[in-house]
Length: 379
Image 1: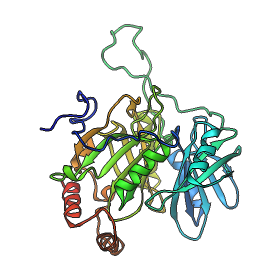
Image 2 (image 1 turned 90 degrees about the horizontal axis):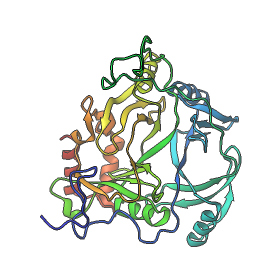
Image 3 (image 1 turned 30 degrees about the vertical axis):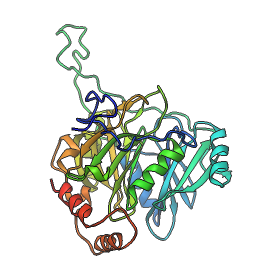
Image 4 (image 1 turned 120 degrees about the horizontal axis):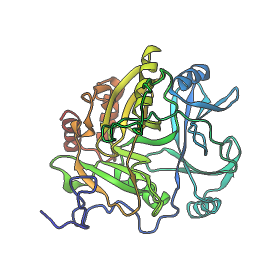
């Protein structure tokens, strides 16, 4: 086995990097984004979008005839904006700048401009384009949203506390209310790209993101990773295990986005609420390996996938990237088997066209990688 670059010490993955592999961070990024601010979508039916949003647990920060701004109960920027348009589509992510000066630096280095943003409370933004073709904005909000009352976490008798009147819960029953799992905040977005390495390096070099975990294809580690879970670099301040995840695939597009809720009971009771209203669960409930989150995935009426999650890992900048083989069974510690819907493995004419286009064009996907991807997702 080649020498390790750093002593990984099994911190969060079975393996660390080997000598000469991708370092998972940039030596001199343009800025260091503080977080994911919000996601931008377009949909033809804002009324239907708002009904699902409230059932999923969002609050409404602002509503106009042409736009719906959704929020969580935590203070800060909104989670999502949905603008009226003839066709449903994901537009792109918006990252939060730590300081207003970061926007000026980013605009100067990239040759763009700082322009006003229509976010509630006002603000400014810089518009960029990543190598996959996603519009990416970096914003600074003038007046962040104030916090709202949140969902109460249930008090748990874990069994370790003494059986006395000072136990956490005595003479009180436990009944999780059947209601939407109130969203606290936006956690992360997952994107598929046909130019994985170029896109990964762009986010590291431009926004200062750092990799928490790499996944590689079985038998092809020497060709580099095919998926990365990427977090914001806040120095010694803990950040979510991943704010952005990228994976190589035949398409270029949105995979899912994730929204934090209070705890497992809120996630499960909120899932029952969504089931009663006829929405489709894509996969869950379970606990992930990379990131450790409790998860539950749902499809909205426009077929976009959204995740409720709780109890995710938090890393400082000191944690090096882990390396692990990619597999369908490696996505969860426990829970039901991963579904074909979640993996996007159901063949369709559009998906077949994406595969043929990716194999024909100048992408990082070739027949051996495609076959290894298919094998990984079925393993």
